[in-house]
Image: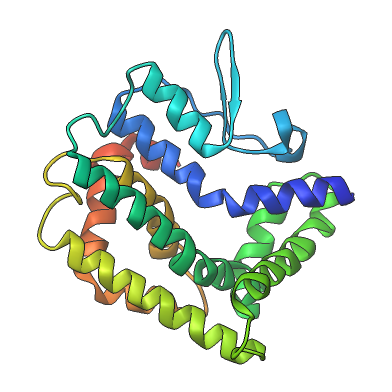
Length: 243
């Protein structure tokens, strides 16, 4: 159980990166087939997403991206050096400023956890682990937030929560300003940054939560909502139609 829980917690931190690779699959033209698995902790190295080819098994997001680039599947070929640097900076911003609030929205906010996240994940985990892992994953998300954000002068949980939501809203505002009226972040062609942003925003945008503090702020930024809708309609229409 402990091993399964550790793997599940690592998997949850990459949940949004799975959406990222779905986006990259579409944007780069890589001929990838996505297989959804329920027992992620039994996968190679206990991590998802995992890229399996005839000769290789590659895990960890950065290594998968590098592998695809070596195979000439790269959504960033046309970016300038500055745009490449901007991509790295915005990815770091997403993981530092937005991810903690997204984890809190899904796993720590009790109304959302009990109404949406727990039954959603439990339905994808075999019994009896479905009775145990969601609760441990919730605690793991809270511990991660406190470990990275619960430093002086933020001593209490409410102070930490207030700060991570301020940071997340500021991050969303920066993304909105950067996107402006463009279709994608670097013009008319999707890139790795678009896949990262979509991977974080699409679940937050589409899932119906009882408590919607961060979701409400996102929905006030019409260009980010349009960005999500355009990618869903243009690149995932068949998948959505298939349920």
